[in-house]
Image (cartoon, rainbow, N blue to C red):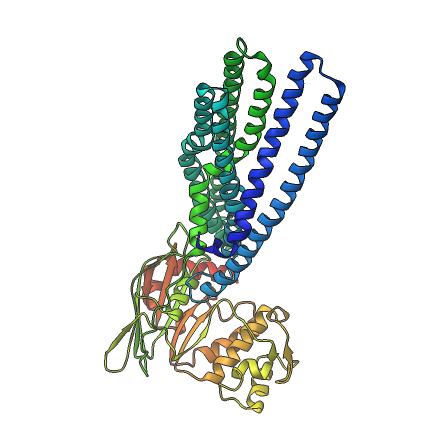
Length: 538
């Protein structure tokens, strides 16, 4: 709970006001019960008026306490969430998470919703409920030790026993739901982004049928959650009914006039304690999400990179995104030497983009070799021009974006020539790019390609370089790409496979086939089948 340090004052005031509001609410119900008992003695009219006035006053006090308490508690919550968002944004800059992923954003929003619940629905109300329970135990001694013991037992059952009993069930159900969501997301991603291949190969319906079990499991998990919540409420209501019966039995013979007052006090306490049970039963899961946001990502030193890279070796690479339940890459190995052209193909969701990202960003399983054979594990390759899947451009001119504000040498005439070559003559070097979304996907690819031409580095690492381009532009781009000495390219475009020295086919995070074009065509394996499907589609 490190993130609560700056809101200690609001938290303390919220708890005190919540405690005062809860006690006033219980006193209000107690006075109502007392008035019912008092009516048996036919009291003077002004006494009844006085009690009614006090009850109304207590009602106003309860509302005022509740309003100020909510004001402070929500202020503290929104402050800490704002600070957490900022800190978490800073930490993700150096993390391995794909921050552009819809799944990442969805999970992040879910985490912050749980942070809000952690304080507003768990920590603060739970503390208030425990404090009120302790005060009621002390007051119950006046009615007898039996009442004090009964109050303690009821508080233990409602605030500790029932939430603890369901905590494991809730945690298991929520964990199962997250795993099912991850698996279904991966399958849906594969189905949507690989729809054309599935339609060409006639596998569309079979893949669609594989999605149905995931949806069914999600519904089952939701039903299980609802069942657990219903069982919890049923048990709590059973405790409530038992307590009311015990109150009647214990007071009926000796002090029957206390029954209405004690019963209404008990009902008021139940209204305060029962809403806390369900959030408290999810404490383990919510605390895990909060802890995830509190973690500081360690900033490790970047290894010294070799001046010239002679080879890149990926050795038994396994990778899983943070907070994910499935490995994206599984035991991936390949070696790319200077002067070789490698292409990575496979269906959508097979892990091609993640492999390219791990090579670009650096990974402990990725080793760079310099000309003398010295190894540098975990370093990112600075000698490569890269085209990742997610492209970003600055709020600046085309010229500044291509030259990275003068860090890349490229004169104005060369930029104009490149724009014309790639059929972007409607842009000039002075055209302002106000935001990345102004550019189409194809325009982003072409501007990044011009930037790579300007860098003129020996290694090119590219993810889907010809995506969203027409056939004429694809051929222009491929001609320039294949003129480079060293390439690592992932693509769905299989029209130029024969121009690469090595082909790697990925499926479900693994490289299942590698070799030259001639070797793979003779094997009649996955690459051969993919090429045949591609030709049939054309």
